[in-house]
Length: 78
Image (cartoon, helix red, strand yellow):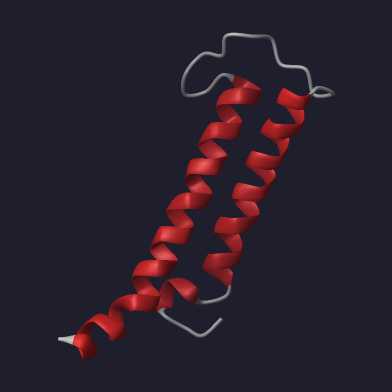
């Protein structure tokens, strides 16, 4: 049983990382563009709210792409 769980561990962790990146992207696009839920306040890029949205979209995309590109989704090392 432990051997089977250890074999699937890298795949499951990579899927969790990719899903986390997409959730960051979704939260950032809600702040920046009002998608998928309309935003309550107007978006100002040069505010704390704008900086957070930019970091969430950029960082979430980087996080997801990095995990896909490094072969982590296929259970590779890294």
